[in-house]
Length: 374
Image 1: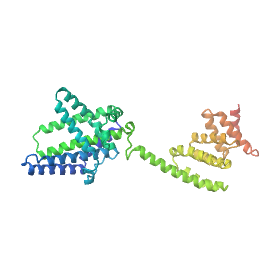
Image 2: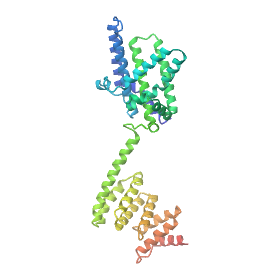
Image 3: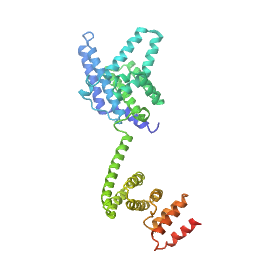
Image 4: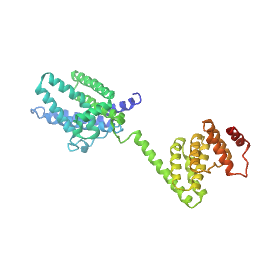
């Protein structure tokens, strides 16, 4: 709740940003002027009233969509976005609300109250579906609305509570002796904040409801991973050519540069991918050369666990694999012994001794090997 609150507050405050304030002020002033001029003609004032309501609702859905997509910045309204041909959703939803109102008034009694209460309870869910999917049929589909309400769980109760508070504030404002123009502006801002709040809840509960916003930490992480995957693949391509030509020294140059520039977190993902792909090249000497280089670079960064994993996997693939130097072998073997992998530690020391029979092991390696054998 605490981590989600800052974004919800930012979404709730979207209508009070400059673009929204200017738009609401323009719509309210337009309606005020038209009502003053056309007020003398019976029923003609309905035209500017419908325009104002329609414009506020359309802009409300723009705010809802922006908040649901992780962009809590009030969009600049345009004629195309606010026009009547930009999707039937808001118009259809308004018509549904009008039809429900007429049905409830026609039926009257307790049944009308139940219909009205049910409509008010599911209205935020309908607005959320319409604003995030732009499918008018889904916005009135009881199954879709039910799934959304269940997914939001207590967040939906929070929305209902905040909307009830807004409704109470709006009712209080209507009772106050305010001038018509500032009253309409404040009421419009309250309505828009409801749209923005619903969009903010959809964004914060995106994983629960299955919503994929245009901007989110998950999408950012995916883009970072894709960029890293491309960079790693380019490095492996640079390694593959010289390695096929048996120029192993030249092949290691891009690998060493890549590993030295990587962070520990990046290496945790890069190293398994590198070793898996190199193992598919069917070049045992190349695999051993890459493994020695990787282990050496990992030890320099104090990533002993990852270095041990590379050594273990390569030993299982290559029966004569040994590390580059005695110092590195002792370091990996000591870590293996510390984490309960004594047999692997001894294997690494035995492999090193077998790889250079003309050179006896140093005192430290000899002592460790005797300790492991004992």
